[in-house]
Length: 167
Ligand SMILES: Nc1ncnc2c1ncn2[C@@H]1O[C@H](COP(=O)(O)OP(=O)(O)OP(=O)(O)O)[C@@H](O)[C@H]1O
Ligand SMILES: [Mg+2]
Image (cartoon, rainbow, N blue to C red; front, side, top):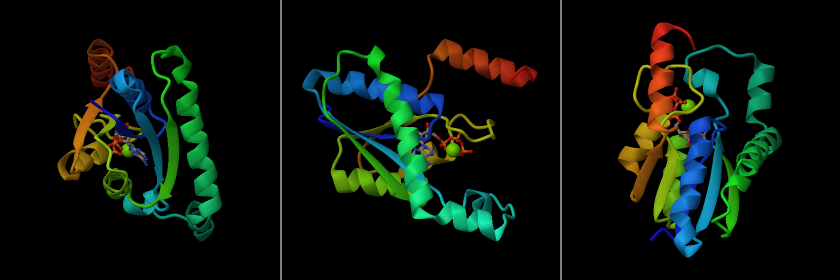
């Protein structure tokens, strides 16, 4: 039984799929869903890219981060009306920091039964089966971690198209 679940949302399709799966898992007991978006203030720097001082200051602004994070979580919630079986409670969390670390720490703080997240996110590098955030969370979290993607058929078609350079 999943009485509480943490769903990390980065705005990607897989993270929206994870939210729908979380609703299905929580539906039997109307468990509570915590949606979280983590704002990495220096993603370019973490990728070794140079950014201007202005861009760094803007990215690190708590107000900007909070606003962008809330918008992403609202968009994710907008995808839900097609899942009427779930009438439980939602909570939304926006934090700044390293996404994997914050997700694992929040899962522990909230004592959730599981984390339900996308296999892939918004990253450009598609060479691996799952992204770096999913990979880290899967290995480090103290609770169950469920990684989901679009239906296997869609996923396979996308992979073939990417391989052929159509995507
Ligand atoms: N900043 C974030 N805040 C909340 N959830 C996130 C964040 N980044 C990723 N996630 C979660 O992790 C899932 C997988 O994303 P991940 O970042 O691991 O893959 P990727 O973007 O394809 O690859 P990478 O970031 O390693 O280039 C997403 O679907 C989402 O559920
Ligand atoms: Mg990513």
